[in-house]
Image 1 (cartoon, rainbow, N blue to C red):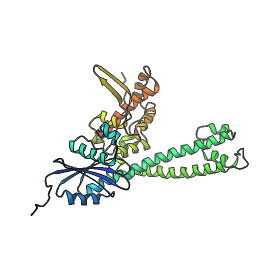
Image 2 (image 1 turned 30 degrees about the horizontal axis):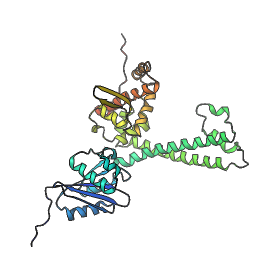
Image 3 (image 1 turned 135 degrees about the vertical axis):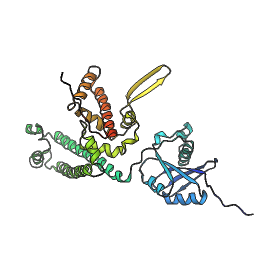
Image 4 (image 1 turned 90 degrees about the horizontal axis):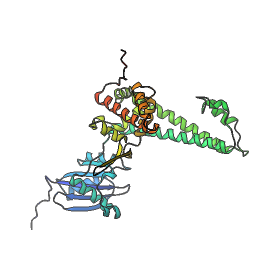
Length: 359
């Protein structure tokens, strides 16, 4: 008996991929309801070969959860002509059964079915030219935290050995200066006759400081590059926004045009309150845990600086302080600062501070 050639021409094929390091769990759902599942090596090329063999001529739409593979899987699939979406795992509709019985097959089928039903909203995909710059800015911040940790461990070692830091190093700019480090290297004696632990910590501080200086130079070079220079100058016109905060915003946000309004941008930063509404009762809580964990806290830090440099923000902070604690008031200033940043980037106009009119 002669068979017609298999063809899915004009039909959408939905693919849910449960991405792991050594294998992918792949679920396929057709428009007509047919479902399939298989595991394979983690390769976009192998998946494309499978689809062409079993679902030829189809219109392929894939989805996977953001994770360790970043955007590499996305770009590999798109280059092969497979439309792809990357989503936040917390945004996938999940039943109680799927919470209880969690397997690769269940997760992959859940993704494919949700994609077919139009229930998923993808995250923003950064351009290739922005990915490395974002990593540089993130790594610089990580190195800075590591340096702070090493300094704290050194200070703890001194205290635990009964070493008192001289008063001359309590002055501004003298702590962890060259003179202070020389004192640590040459004059400090621990309880033991040896001081290997202190020397190891000082060596680590020296290495990390050197690496941090290189990272700072790289971030500064990025701010002067053709890709970021114009937008960097716009951002640094906002009070409280310096080199590191501006570059973190530019590399983490990417395209400010993807936000329709100020609230969407504030939500991305995690600067909107949680809301619970039931019947006639509506209550608002603390700021949401959703939001970018890198730049959200940086905007709050910038808000503390902005109230010392901008008269309008300082006045707003003083008014808030009459009704709430400083920590609560500064979050509201951070939200105002986010609105200013959004307006500056949307209008491509530098920030102009509030001007008092003499009468």
